[in-house]
Length: 455
Ligand code: ANZ
Image (cartoon, rainbow, N blue to C red; front, top):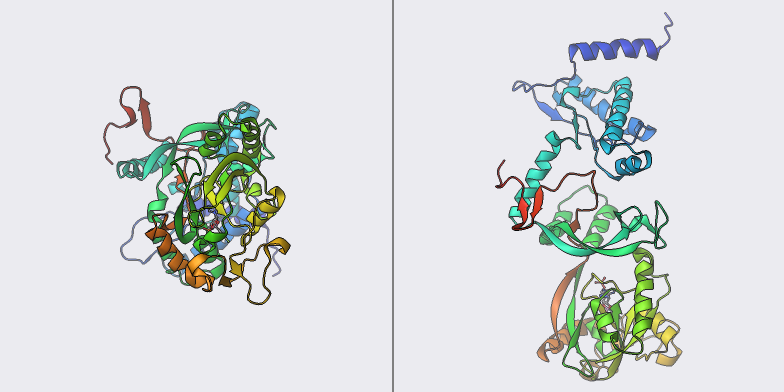
């Protein structure tokens, strides 16, 4: 008999049967082996799309297979239902985010049900409901008690028109992606998770993930970004103050001819204060702050800076080094200051070319000797040290350790480890996110709402 598959008829019939019989409801059963299958919860954006269909079909096939093999399968579903789009929709249409979110959930739930996935719908959760997020709040309080959740002031991108904090990706050429207003910088107290306490554990973990693609592990390691180097101290030329830098290349110290400071660094305005350059420096800083952070620190962006009319001294040669504010130096990496070695760092080379700054070769290319005046780009490979006092003639990579020790011995440096990883800022959402379970009391400051930490 040639019977056609008629989904409207067959699927509806069986989906009703599964629902009436509670076929996929699970209860604990010590007799049977258990199997837990969890797929990433959908964000209730409006409608189920083909990506959902593919993803949840794969999970469903596995769940059904295991069930047929006799396992007690727990196959739950829920909604990842907090997030900015709900707030944006709320602002746009003048409706509460909860209404928008729950209407989307209702619609998408019907769609998922029509797919006939084998979920235990009795266990459905939605992360924007207090029954769910109370657990996140409890974890938060536990972390707060241990000092792993903390508050600190930090600058954020602020759209004065939307009255909202923007992520870096939401700032397009200095303008708000939503309304096109000029984005400004604002200081806010924000909450952070102290993930940097776990940086070594996170790195070790990368070695314990057999079967993970090397590409993913490399990305992870780079994100953590462990660098061995030195913190070096540069005395100011005409005061007792010092500037500290982080460098991984102390072997090039004799070639450091100028100093660069991140435009946002407070030292920039401090140094320029009261000098004829003050206004120029201020204009530069304001302009740089508006440039996209990712772009301006990329290799291809034009290197720019402004002279602060100040000098420091190279700690080994005692030569005067002009100090500049620069657009490509990051305020929140290392010390926010960089000793520039134009002969052996390409970014510094480009900067020196633009502003006519001195170049001294300190690593000689054994194959093709370098001349500072005729170099067309920085020499970034290995070689033999020259113009480096008692270290002349050593292989530069081998001298790293000796020079670090020498700088330490003259009180001009110490070995350190720097990580790229930063603590995790969690205050980006304004309203439609898990409420932080802390109130700010005028008298006692930040306090836990429950008056005590308990489950
Ligand atoms: C002098 C030098 C000479 C450097 C040279 C490199 C090559 P990683 O490996 O990523 O840790 N640096 C330090 N702080 C910085 C900041 N806040 N923003 C931008 N760059 C910064 O990189 C360490 C190197 O990055 C440091 O070593 C410093 O430049 C620069 F031939 O110091 B180097």
